[in-house]
Image (cartoon, one colour):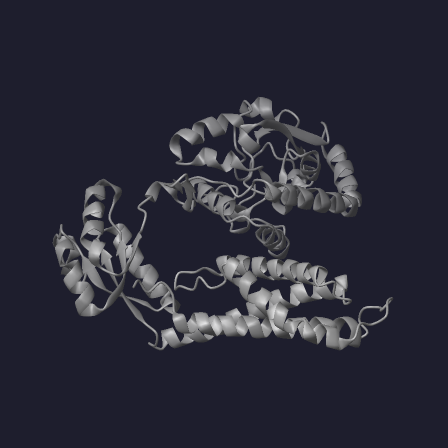
Amino acid sequence: MLKRSSQTLCIWFIACDLLMAGIAWIGAYWLRFDTGLIPITKPQPDFSLYWRALPIILICAGVAFRFAGQYEVHRLRRFREELVAVVKGAILLSLLAMATTFYRQDPYESRATMILFTVLVGVLILVTRRLTWGAVRWLRRQGFNQSNAIIVGTGRVARKTARALRHANWMGIRNIGFVEDQTSRWTNDLNILGVTDDLPKLIEKYKIEHVFIALPLNRFADVRKVYNVLAQSLVEVRLVADVPNLAGWTLTTSNLDGLPIIGLRESPHFGLNVIIKRGMDVTFSAIALVLLAPLMLLIAVAVKLSSPGPIFYRQERCSLNGKPFQMLKFRTMRADADIISGGMGWTVQNDPRVTPLGRFLRKTSLDELPQLLNVLWGDMSLVGPRPERPVFIRKFSKTIPNYNARHTVKCGITGWAQVHGWRGNTSLRKRVQYDLYYIVHWNPLLDLRILWMTLWHGVFHKNAY
């Protein structure tokens, strides 16, 4: 049969999970009633009631963890997938525990204890999993628990796959060599074991467990041939997608009435994620406006006194879905700067249009503070790709691949590209690459990380003119 997962690891995880569930069940009672951390307003239930319910809780744990997918153990499983499974398992176990308590009309009930139990079981299982995987990865780096792989192809994608397997040696997947039907002098540096028809023999000879098909898209017929050759072989077969023009995007797979669907461009900003991100924007921007109000008032007075003209500068930019809005900044240039440049020019080093105060504000990014109002109004987000003018968007979308994909989310005051130095007079392609990475990998913790990096690295930027 196909070796999808390690039976030893599965048994270990089942035993550890049940043990942690038992410890969490007892520990929740101890934290609630014996430590004095939480005030007791009702008569304390007898511990024997809790102890008698332990076998039922362990049975519920086995069911909950199985349905949550905690035992889909394989070498390519990501931490994010395991985290989601553990959280699901902890919540499902808590619901089953409350349901059985209600059904049995158990005289014991405590909402605080149930909350503690849910948190404890999730944390304990996750810690146990991390320690176990740490030990397994260390053993694999030492050469234990290794499995062999063959890569079909010798091109750019095949070489990147080989490098990735060497880099991620903690997975314990060792590349034995390559299989290629179209060898050339450019493949002399690779360990080519044979051609596609040799795969069954090579799998048996080298005890291969994984085959990575890493052929370019223009050789789709060869992909089908490889799969047909492997039809009678009990190995795991994975297709490494050759999508060089989708830098920064990750592929997703789904099922449409039995039809496999591969997503090439999907944003994580939907449903509950939109509510969470908007909540963070409103909360943090409101707090920042209150705390920075004295500084913004001081800057406003300084701008007004330093040169004739308005305090704020408004410029049309584009945000979510390319929708235009008026972005606010403290004015850093002469009032007639747009007339001088025709309203089209970027700021350059030693730009004569910039006032002395404006140069300081740009260097310290203090001119961006009024955009907190744009965030509060909903035009922008605290974190996201920087907004651009419509005229430049039309220009860049024709020359930079996937440039318009930046507008699948709201633009931001700061972003993943900015905290890595890609702002001002720097590579646009690099900026887009970092923006797309942010869009695909977004989560609330990434936003908090970017905000922290923005503060930690300071407000001075060498590329800001």
